[in-house]
Image (tube, rainbow, N blue to C red; front, top):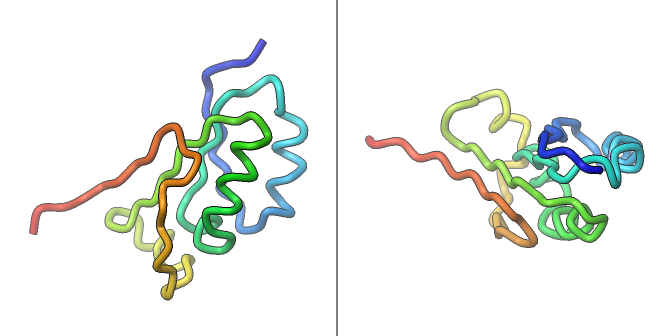
Amino acid sequence: MSTDLILALDVPTREEAAPLLRQLRGSLKWVKIGLQIFTAYGPDYVRAVADEGFNVFLDLKLHDIPNTVAKAHPDDRENQFISTSMPSIRLSKF
């Protein structure tokens, strides 16, 4: 039986993520993909995780965590919500 806990996939590479996903496939429903790994691999990686049977929480915070934003590639312009079950967008009033 799978649980509703969300795995925060806060690793910099898909190679580091792969063993975690393999180990938890079938026992975990949700995976959170953050800005760093998303900008490294793009929407195709989100699709690949979703195709493994996980619900995807795409968490692309650009406002509240400067270290996360600094680690993301600055030229990424393809922030599409592909195969996600729960996108997270945080905005600030100027």
